[in-house]
Image (cartoon, rainbow, N blue to C red; front, side, top):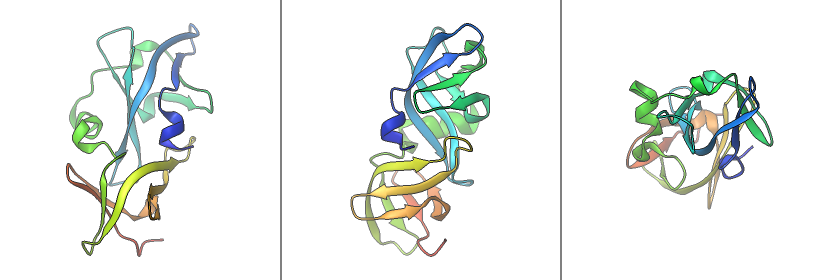
Length: 146
């Protein structure tokens, strides 16, 4: 699934079948090339973040969690990765050699594991395994990684 398809996905609590939020942004952990968590909107409480490990499933039509109490205020690394400075979509992509590879237009990920399959720019599709770093300025990739 792609980030563009996942945006606005409903987040459902399986214990009461209630909608407890909608996906606003997806955070990528550059050290593991996986999804770290989700920033949500329209949540019932003060929390707006959901760690990937708290998901029951990420399906074609909805994200499921055990209950709304899994939604928290992000702290630490998750808070940093969910911040606007680390948003992947729209980020400039640079190779480790300093070559501009374009701007991230989408990201393809595995709905089961949360692994980033590929980063898509207007000019390239880069394997997720090539992600090296992510900061406020750019997503850095090693195009030589398989």
